[in-house]
Amino acid sequence: MDRTTNLGYLLLACILFASCGFNQRDHQIVISNPTDQERQELVAIRHAEWLASFGRDTMVRIVDVASGNEIPYQLETQGMAETQQVLLAVTVPASGSITLAVEQSAPAPVAARAYARYVPERYDDFAWENDVVAFRMYGKALEGRPDDAQGLDIWSKRTTDLVVDKWYAQGDYHTDHGEGMDYYWVGMTLGAGDIAPFADDTVVFSKHYRHYEIVDNGPLRTSFKLTYEPWQVGTKTVSVTKQFTLDAGSQLNRVDVTYSIDGDGKLPVAIGVARRKQPGELLQEEKEGIFGYWEPEIGHHGITGVGVILEKGGFSGFGELSNQFLAFAEATKDTSLTYYVGGAWNKAGNYTSAEAWFAYLRAFRKRLASPLIVKIN
Image (cartoon, rainbow, N blue to C red):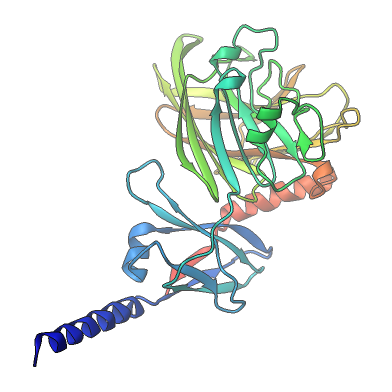
């Protein structure tokens, strides 16, 4: 047998080995929905489990076996050097399931549906968005100015396009040009659901964030951390880190808040929502950990709904000041407190009444309690 023949056999063996190697890992992913509502959300598979089952995480195409539709996915790093999870954007019918197959071929490009960035050109803002809503937190350069404000700002969108870069570049985002606008008033409140210590019957504000870290930045999930310098709360010195995570299609952020606290390590906190002069509608379900506010209509701008949901347990109570509503909880030193916060705009067309918005918040809470079930068979 000559050298050419040997090389031919070797090449054929390599091709067969590679093909069989992938086929041996040709498992299927079954995602089941334990709730009676259709679910459109991201599910996560640990990267190590993914590699053990499918052998690779790039140049693969994920398809719904029944429909043939391709499933968009993102490799999530969680701020690490290596991928930690594979995120899949799925739609699962109520009380049903879907089966996904993984093919060795080039995937279609995934359109960005979540994005965050530091905005030094606008007083150190930090802004982020997905395809349904946008937010910002104020930075150091705004402190002491006449237009200074404290809490979480929400931008009203009626487009699925990402608009943060465009609106900042235009500098006219307080006017609706057909895509939405920023008309939400924050002032010296916690805005659309920021969190702060509560002592002596008042909110004890920090200064604005001092450092940011982008953890992941789309296309399906964006996540970042904001760090604040220490400040005095009564006799205690505290500091805080807030990690925000926003998924494509979600009206609400996940917020993981970690306080460093001297003393006994316990800190009463309030999650606040700016209160308007005219009456709106409130949802206050203490045991379920749900707070909702459907604002009065603001001129010709429309109506904003704001919502806050604790991941676990209930609020310790509700309160109000002249300029904001408050939901109370307790933070523990160096232990993450997790809640979800966000909003909706009636002119976007998805939630046009208090009833619809409150139903969304209750359904969201139900989904948290009964996550989608993911199995690789």
